[in-house]
Image (tube, rainbow, N blue to C red; front, side):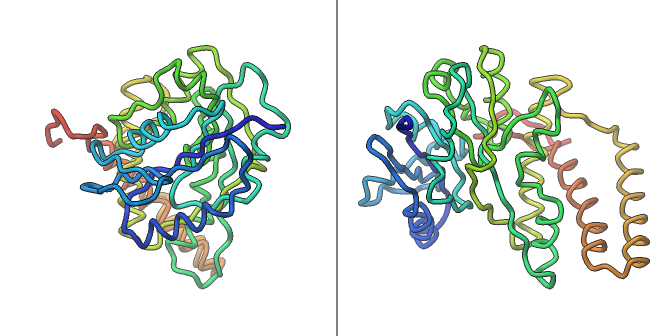
Length: 292
């Protein structure tokens, strides 16, 4: 018999989007002691007549929403998934087969980006080619590797011992949680088979905004944990971006490949947006920040 789990999903959006999310969550196979809770982090959101949804708009960060949701449960494990994902019905069973080691405080589930049609919008196609949502993307940082909170399970004992997520930051709260858990002696495991399907950004604007936010989070992590995020100097970065774009376009023309051309355009765009994001504040609400 697997341990009980409280599933917590931070959400921001319209009532229609909330309804669609609840439909996706309804497929989860639950056992006695399991709960599913959506935490509405939408600014000025008001309580809805549903015991499985609570409003938490005071601080507009996913971390704040997750902490408020975690407070409502008592299960041995907390499972956090993002609102733009679709869980497999047996997600919770897969997380605990086999059971995590006693010293494991954090388990990384899989995040899958299915292949879109080859004629899909360029930004959608790029997200698949780049696989930015996968856990491999952030575990690639080696000793500073961490799982994305789009799909993770945290032992409640470990979570409460370190005070949960740092809720005043907008991004990189998953990296921070991982580093503090490791510093407290807890281990990290992976369960790729405990997977959710991730919905990629559908517009270039949404894609750029996401990278700006991630850039702000990356800069915050590097300030808080020096050396955690490898950074190029401004001049080195500019040379890399120009070289990647020019070389990528030439390669795409040579191959006559739409995918290669998409990658040549969007990879530097992603990097530039992330780099610009480093100039933005990661704290919410924004406190002291001077335009740089």
